[in-house]
Length: 250
Image (cartoon, rainbow, N blue to C red; front, top):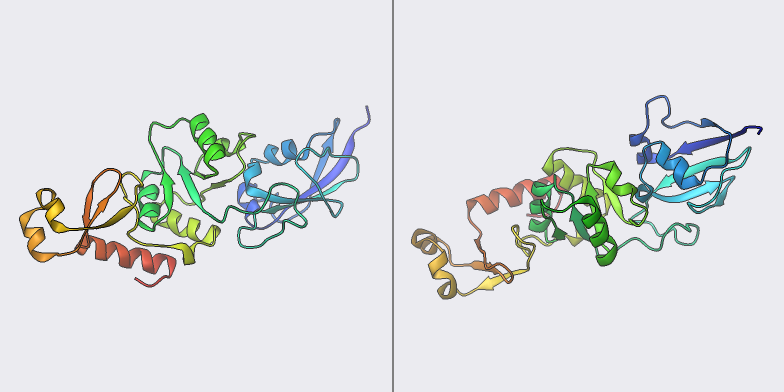
């Protein structure tokens, strides 16, 4: 069987997954079969969830398209802040009601996202298949440091975090999904993801030290787990750090 020759090029942050000699350039390909575009992309270690537009010889193509001799393949990342639905056939519009589910290694990031008001599921007992199932069922974006989790064929929305530092990960997520205007500090419970609301001090007096009640008069409680919050010095410090990190008003 004669072989086929083609070329592929990856754009923007998709190059983060590539070896230096492959990044930002045409990569020659040689096959003795006709692989699908999805298989080809993932052979470079790039999860399909990172891709939103594929052009083959300048024409939009789906993941199932087979590579033929002489094809030139261009692969572009997801455009969360730009609607390209008129040319992309890979998925619908980005999820503008942003909800997340995180893998078992991202507990600190989960707390920061909740502090910023984002609906964020996290449980260190979740297995990969459970995360994938919940993501599909509840239309949640998977955040992970495990590329393999994003290669589940049923997963449509996910992002591989480049940083391994929780606060930098928060900054990365806010920038990647264009969330700056959606931040609502102090509206979700950092422990369970429930909604918090202001509560009369008389209702939660038994949960708050007397000294704290003496210095603070605004208290908040999670509707789900009952945890009580107040805007103490730790809260103010964290607010300033996060506001500075993602460039919002504290």
